[in-house]
Length: 82
Image (cartoon, rainbow, N blue to C red; front, side, top):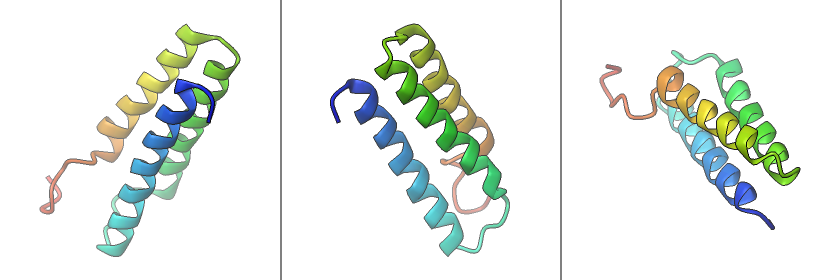
């Protein structure tokens, strides 16, 4: 954990894990497992690019990953499934 990219991607991944576990516990099967894999891959790629000093690409990948999480996985959709 040496760069800001390490901390940011670990925080995003931790939130992703919590979201997955909460939805699994609730029996919510609306999200296919591969969506979580895509988001985790985005975290890994963003971290790699940032650690290799490709800052613009890293920020773009992390922003796209967050967009994917909010648009596809909808972490704040509430209990009713809206």
